[in-house]
Length: 157
Image (cartoon, rainbow, N blue to C red; front, side, top):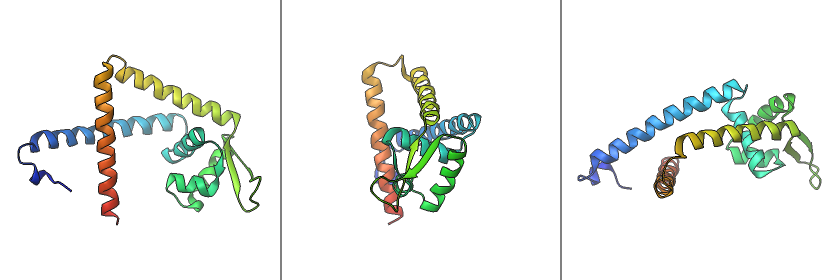
């Protein structure tokens, strides 16, 4: 892995870019926290809803794996979401040991509303950017995310 010490000709722009990423993380994180709190959600609960919205019904074990939490942790999240009428749990049709989790109609409507808010924010931030500039920005973010995941997996190996 390269370090800033290996790039003597570009440490200024590299550091400035990382500083902007940290600033973006703080601003976006605060915005997400406020938005979720306004809707009575935690980020963990929102993540569960988002996974079910995008991937459809799944077992509790698969949901725990997808969210990177323990099955015990996902049970607590699901208990709260079920109490709010956003998810339903039922016996798996082919595996008696598994429980299938899905969004209720209320959960689908709620999550679609979250998606609508996200789409509005995307339009606010990017609607006036030329497509080529937005494509370059998105590609750069993908590269940065991949590299950060590599750093994280290397640090935890």
